Length: 147
Image (cartoon, rainbow, N blue to C red; front, side, top):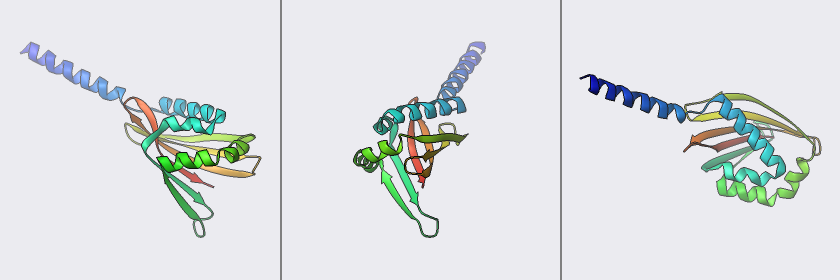
């Protein structure tokens, strides 16, 4: 009976340790944000390896009354970045970046917001990134841009 109890207890500890290892925390979220900012500063195309296959991108332009929303999947987003590479690099030359609002949504999902002000084009863009822990890797599953 004691052996049976120890065996059951061992499996509970093992299962809880595995589920804890698959949880996203604020420290991981902040480190991922820093990695994304560093890599995309070198080249906007560096973000591609962090995009989930289920990626959804929403870009909001204008006001909520007279604005327009564009939606992209991963392939469309990659094509858009590749076509706009020169303009993106130009606007990235002189910019201020503020990152805030880190939050854990569920055990495997998190979110953070990046406010980028480009001095070159004199425009702010607020981007909210939703990420998911997939097979011990953090992937971006949603980006909402407000310009």
